[in-house]
Structures are given as C-alpha cells and as structure tokens.
Image 1 (spheres, rainbow, N blue to C red):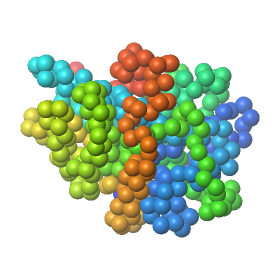
Image 2: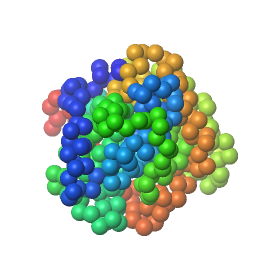
Image 3: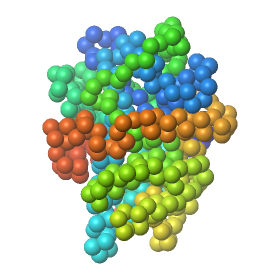
Amino acid sequence: GQCVAVCPTGALSEKDETASVLRAIADPDKTVVVQVAPAVRTALGEEFGMAPGTLVTGKMAAALRRLEFDYVFDTDFAADLTIMEEASELLDRLTRHLAGDTSVKLPIVTSCCPAWVNHLEKRFPDLLDYPSTARSPMQMFGSIAKSYLAEKIGVKRQDMVVVSVMPCVAKKAECAREEFAVDGNRDVDITLTTRELASLIKRANIDFHRLEDDDFDSPLGESTGAAVIFGTTGGVIEAAARTAYEFHTGETLENVDFTALRGVDGIRSATVDFAGIDIKIGIAHGLANARVLMEEIRKGTSPYHAIEVMACPGGCIGGGGQPFHQGDESVLRARQQALYTEDEAKVIRKSHENPHIKKLYEEYLGKPLGEKPHKLLHTHYVDRSGRKTK
Ligand code: SF4
C-alpha cells in the first residue's frame, strides 16, 4: 500500500487491534457495533482468492454477524450524512460569495481523508479555513451511534464499543484525536484495516466462500449509491454535486452520473452547470497532486469552487489497509468499477433521498448545519506546523 508513505507517525506500524475487538465481543457488558467503509467491500474478497473488484458486501455482512458483533452497520449510511452537511456547507459558502461577501473561503476542500487533514495541518496552516468542517463518515457514524442509537436501544455510551473496518491505516490515528471523544470516551473505539478483518475471519474458521449474503442492520445500515462511490477518487465530490445541485436548483437531477469527475488522472477538473452557474470542481489524489491545488489557493489563482483530495492513489480503494496490490493499476480499476456498478444498482442514488437520513434529521438532528449537527457532525483543525503563532 502506497499510503504508508503519507500516514502519520503513530499509524505507521499498523498496530494489530484484532485482540481488542475479540475482548470487547467477549465482554457481556458491552454492546459492540461495527461499521464498514465503502472501499472494503470491493477488496476484501481478494484476501480469500477472489478476483479484484468482486463485490462481497453480503458475505462481509454475514461474516461480521458470525464474528458476533451485536450490530452490523454500514459507514455508507454516515457517508450520506457527510454529504448532507458538506453539500449544505458548499451552498452556504457559494451563496454568500455570490452575494458579494469577500470573507468567504472558496474553494471548499474535502476533509474526510485523515492523512490529508494531517498534511494540511502541517503544511498549510494558513489555509485551515478552507476545508469543510464536516467530520469524516467514520467519525459521524461513531458520534451518531453513541448518541442517537445508544438512546434508541437504551445502552449507555460507556457500554457501547464502536469498531470500524477501514481501507486505511491513518484512520487509526483519526479516531484517537481528542476532539472525537466525550469525557475521554471515544466516538470510534477501535479501527481495523481490511486485512485485519480478513485475518479475524480466517482465524474464526469461517468459510468465506460459502457464506450466504446477509444484510446490514437498520437504521444505520441503509445507504445510497452516492455513499458507495466515496471509496474512489472523485466519488465524494460527485456525491456532493448530486445533492448540492438539487438543494440549489430545487429541481430533480435526471442524469446523476457526473462522468467528467471520474477517472484516474492525478489531477482532474470539471465544470458542473448548476442552473446557469458554472461550478468548477478540482480533484486530486496523492499528496503531491493535492499540494499543487493548495499552492494555487495560497497564490490566489485557484479557479475552483470545490476540491476533493484523497491521499492514496485511486482514493480509498488503494488505501494502505487494503489487500496489497503491488502497484498494479488494473487492481485499482477493478475495485473502482465495482463501486460504480454498486452505485448504479442502487434504487436511491442521492444522499438526501435516503429515508433513514431524512428521519434522523426529523427526529433528532434538525437542519443541516444547525446546532446539533454542529456539535455532533462538525470539527475544527489545528495548526501543527510547529510555527510560532501569536
Ligand atoms: Fe485513508 Fe482513504 Fe485517505 Fe487513503 S485516501 S489515507 S485510505 S482515507
């Protein structure tokens, strides 16, 4: 995995945390909830000899149930939630910008990749007002699980353990950031990589090939096609564009495939027509490419309204926690294609149409960017450059 080169120090060793997960599952006083990121389902099968790009969503859910997690949920649910907040933030900044407010920071920059956030905090401390304040889907999931879900199922926060399965080693350090804890109790307690999950399944003697497909639990298991494509470069901004377009125009977006945003070039750009307003979007994967787009912002020459950055080549499908692909691009393409196929197969392909997300806002959160979302779903960034600030 090429991600290793960009991961923060603490995450380099990829501490094996499977033992902590097994301990939590064996503890009768703990309710153990697991969430799985979008990119995991396109690659996990490779650990069991399947071809790259084999989608194993159903088998993966079945295996997690066999491992005796109490609830098997999907990070994709929270990816829809991230889009609700991030698309609203984009529109809020755009509207103010168009009204002549010169204090607005544009382009908005995605912030769901923790290796990217670390890099920003170290190398671009002067630009910390640009990234979206929306938390990553993993952290939004943890926060909602330990508030909304805990209340719903009558479990105390301290008695709930949230485990995440991620394609990523940098996520291990993300969940340890102090802003993602309440009185020292983390929103996401333990993060496993795709490889660690495979090792757990093998050690439990589960015959992965013969598992019958299973579904995620409800309500934090339902997601849209927009959430699925979070796992590949360009997917987050495409998902955001689907929702922001409809929020802005009030019209139904008929063709949801923004193909101009897709591809594998290290830096891509596209213009999306928002009913007469041209929204310019930039996409970078790999930190060297991201730095090019950030330097433009620094110089005041950035042509973009929104930028998506992922640290790993290909996005999370190529993450450092995934089965090793030895730099083989055809593996990444196969994983990417699997996500677009899953997106196409979904009945609902826009985050704001996810009925469980709608219900969550109605019952609990109120409006996007409101007081409760601000507290539970947003974050802030810290200057970690080591420079002296006054
Ligand atoms: Fe992790 Fe994805 Fe970022 Fe890679 S691109 S560091 S896998 S979040």
